[in-house]
Image 1 (cartoon, rainbow over the protein chains, first blue to last red):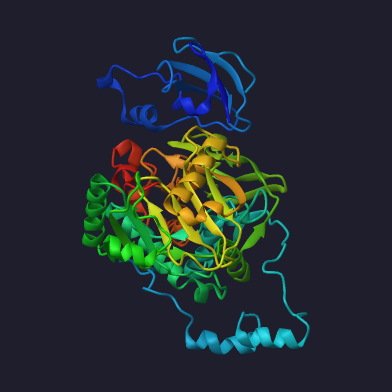
Image 2: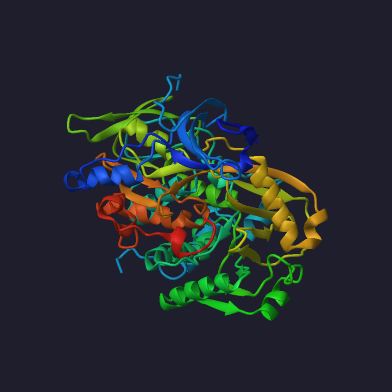
Length: 93
Length: 439
């Protein structure tokens, strides 16, 4: 069971949250000039690392706010909680 | 249809049966009797432990069902026998040893139906083909719905499947009650309104599938290496794969295959390309053994639960994914508790049955919930990945189709729609939405 530190509500059980997948994905543009391969990468390709993953979560059963987590995908250990607009923290990956 | 399409079922020919006695290597009742008389002293290991050769025509990374099946069909159907299978741990120790062994082909899109029904046809003849009892038991599957909307979805799926030649039938409550007497049809939240049945579906023994392919491939000259991890890929100036570096030394190869469910992204990273794949943990459970109580496979579209009873008597069941990326083969508590709880909701009589084991496999989930088969952006590197939660049922087809591609240089008609390039072309096969079932 993950104990997730919601930046707005404090520590809560994982069942109150939903994971929204990889964070920091930049939409390429302008759309008319983006080649198909780049669109495919933007839409479908994900980093999916074995180790540190920077991902979006939403507190669906609480405040309803989105935020970012830095979480290890092998140990599930949460290393950082940070705001949606913050840059990716420097962590050993 | 291509030349090497399988017949509807593949069975040993009389000639093969006759040579059984002469060679005394095949498994048979006769062999069992002889070994019984001479103290079981004549059994040999199922595969050799060969020396690593410096060069192979094909190197297959991943000694699970898909990798070994690819090696077997390369050797058997296409005569390509200079093949190495490299396994980081022990063969069948990944998802081949972690699934719930259900085999079915009730998908929605014609491409998926062709793929999974090819697999089912190959499974139907597999014990005879491999001379290894994979215990494929075609006990049928019942997929049930709990609301008018579930029933509309099921009717739509059945219509699509029948239009594409699959024998499935809508069934009413009376038939379901007869087939599944322990099921609570009048549950207040999940009443059973009806469902459909695929009679040819069933379960098989997962270890036997792996060991059967390994033994058959080994006997055709394929080399299988366990505890042999790939550390990097070698490429020439044009970026073409020329081989792999492993913990047991370098190997050069004409073609390299990756069939490493759960770890596809990490290996693709190593090869220098990205995949539309996310790894999730999928949990499975087995209870203490019971007397026969469930002689078919049960699946619910509404709750995602599926359950069957193993030959040993344990109830083997599972549900949905743990919905955040994970490479941990253990699974989280909330999903585990929900899945066990929903089993007791559907089958109140099972609520006092004790849980024996729980585990998780790491599965590749693709954005359109369909597999990726064939070429990768790296020339010479082929991929078998992205089966999500349903890779076991596809083992024979995954092997058959990729072996065809490697040997002939072009994708088999059944495999072509599942190419890596579909994400650029936009020709997705969106089974997550189409089939309306948990996978």
